[in-house]
Image (cartoon, helix red, strand yellow):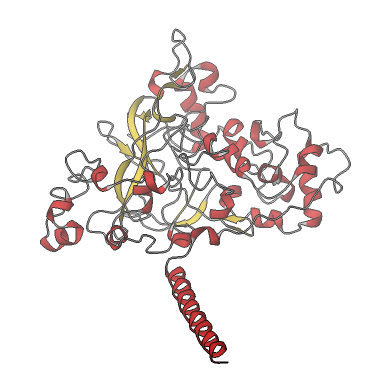
Length: 480
């Protein structure tokens, strides 16, 4: 009996220890959650094959069929930037009031601008038939459900966002499911006219990614796991088009505010973005466009190569396995708007990140910086947008003067008749192509004689590891 009682007491003691240990683990996980636990299991999608049986004559008819079971879907889409190609109520520092801006009406330094060039640009619009300002944004049948929901792998859009003639609409409709990597990638991996033109951290290598390309996409991970979607509004911010972090996402949502065992490393998070250490390189498997010179376009004597020279677009430089550039970034940007004055002797920053060493909301972030040489008006000193595609466009007649005159009544940008070319840049913050943790940057990658950081450009007198870090510099007033 005594042995039995001792056994019960010992067993009870072990149970208490286990409960205490479990409590410690649970408490630890609350402050530093296990990130993969945050990802929802992907559901088995409803089979639409029996639902659609008759041939579709128009893509709009597919949308009308979808709306019979999903009556609110088009209305939801119509409230999003994927449909409107603009965001309302955007504030930019140093400017009065709010702006309604987006791909629809902002200049850029790759394809220059959308207005008047809808034939090719709008092949990535989530709608059908947007040819000009007369497009009806309130017409529900114009919404393209298939671009985000096709699982057949055969759906492809052409002129003005309409499906290419060879697309079997019935086969695509039968295949539909939740958005997969391929659905997002068909536009975001190829934005700007080719793979890797705009983004340095988005290309086809993410579709079936190796772990050294991206630790997230090498798992059973899809875009909407991170870019969560509610009522068709997708989380995430394009800082090329938006001025702030509204509807944005961050690493800490899954990894917590203090994800490392080392408190010293956790302290870095006060001033260094997660991406800075965990994305040491971008464009890991395929090149990304780093330089685009429109002034060299139109030369019939040059050999064409999509990564070096095209007569219709000019001269390019691509880079692969690139080291990012680093800037302070408080998740807001300035923005060049149409008719802003430029100094053609200086580089024009189209979307410079805001923040500095004294900004407590800013962190050091990694960026791809794309340089371009693009047209401007010599009299008015502002950037110009030509008509490129379509009748009379530069791509057909190779006449810059005519292309600017054609654009003037469409864009509202007055053209003096005298043009030149000026240098611009665009900053693309990096958040994809996260490396395995053992490949993250180490101390000597940033600090020391061979470190990759330009500490003086970041506002420090010298390498902060030698003089006490950001906080000490601020207290001494040494950083400007």
